[in-house]
Structures are given as structure tokens and as C-alpha cells.
Image 1 (tube, rainbow, N blue to C red):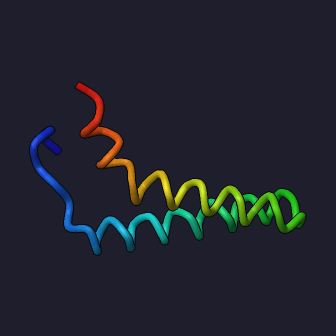
Image 2: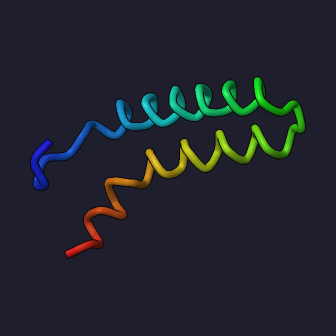
Length: 59
């Protein structure tokens, strides 16, 4: 995707949620300690949700 184009916010939210759930599931398969898979899922989701805003800060 070109630098000036933006993804629909709702589509980005759904993508972040789906990738967060996937990352949580993979982490849960490796370790069943709740803080790890919750944390990994939330970090992945937040990075996807706000990644476009963070990229806009980079010159």
C-alpha cells in the first residue's frame, strides 16, 4: 500500500483483533500461563490498530 493511502479504521480494527486472537492462540498452545497469552494478544492488536498512526509520525 502506498504511503499516502489509509485503510478503513473498522477494517484495521477487525484485522488487529483477528491477528491478536491468532497470536494469543499460538501463545496459549505454547504456554497456558494467562498473563503471557493475554499480553501477546493485546500487544499485537494494539500495534495493528495504531500502526498506521505510528507510521505517520516517521518522516
